[in-house]
Amino acid sequence: MRQFVAPFIRYLEEEKNLSASTVSSYQRDLGPFMEFLEQQDLVEPDKVSRALLVMFISRLKQDGKAPATITRSVVTLRSFFHFLVRDGVLSHNPALLLDMPRQDKKLPVVLTTEEMEQLLKAPDLSTVQGSRDRAMLELLYASGIRVTELVSLNDENVRLDLKYVHCRAADGKERIVPIGGAAVYWIQQYEQEARPKLVQRQEVQTDPALFLNMNGKRMSRQGFWKLLKKYAADAGINKEITPHTLRHTFAVHMLDRGADIRSVQELLGNSDHGEPLLYRHVPRPSMKEVYDRYHPRAGMYAPNSHE
Image (cartoon, rainbow, N blue to C red):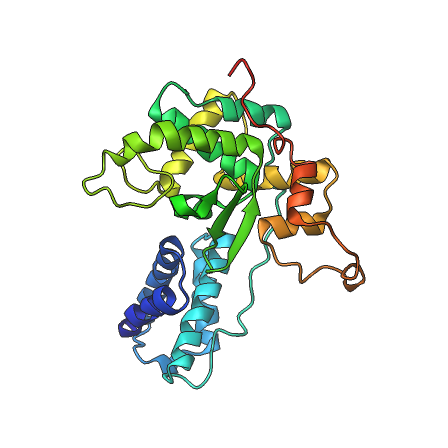
């Protein structure tokens, strides 16, 4: 079975066009499954039954794996066997009817407006790193984009004159997202003063990434997460926050100020398949209009005098 893993990974990268982190997750999830099959002396794909897959999922539960981890494993198995059917290795997908484990839905962590302001002010603006980090925090809060979308941005993807970013999600979907005056200001500061200094640290100055690490290379998701934790601690925020916290905070602050949920979903790039059909005929203002009206920092064009 292991001989099919490498072609599957290439399929995810080249045809599905998934991000490196997502592909890595799929590959990591397949490891325990391959070990399980070898323990069962199974090497042929057509010998894998739904009952065997249920046994593997039960093993994960016995090992104390979290429901989210098990759910991710089921998704990986469905995709892997779909690939084998697609390539004619199998005639059917044995993982198609696997049940997803029930998960207790936790309310997302959301920052208050005051906490968000403190977080934004945490970076030391007298340093190159601080200028970059302020721009990243402002952009995440201004746009609600995912951290993977943030670190994937190239310099050309941001149009400050038109106040929008052109981002691409892990699934390959692209969208245009409006940003406000505060984010425009801090990105300008970073691009004019800090980014050129980071570019100089590159061995070959060709990396188009908007946000560079201190070695002049593209900022990673893990690198940003470490910075976020540091700034949350510096700001005295006693909450378990992640990069996704800023996405939730963006959405909640927009809704609290009166934006309608469908417009916020559209800004986030979320599907609205669960939306009641009776609302689909209701005309909505443009995303830019909604954004400018309801985002707390949309109309800011310069920092407060004390920053």
